[in-house]
Length: 85
Figure: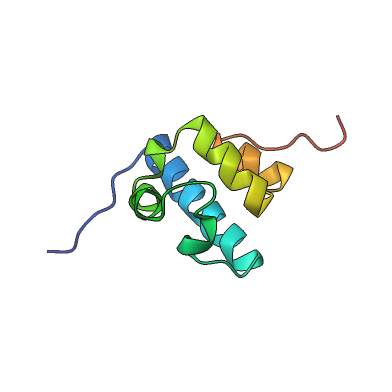
């Protein structure tokens, strides 16, 4: 029997945060260990798998390294940018 993904906005946001962190790391060509100044490597690995467990301070420190775009930050919170307004 094929597995099914849980539905809902929070599941979508978890996937979005996971994707944005992964893209940010790829953009800077970084590995988990390279974020050691922001968050413990083991903790980071766990929280990438369960992104809803990141606290705001951790996301701020990660952002200091990865420099998320404004659109990426909005996406993490389930928002879209307003163009022209």
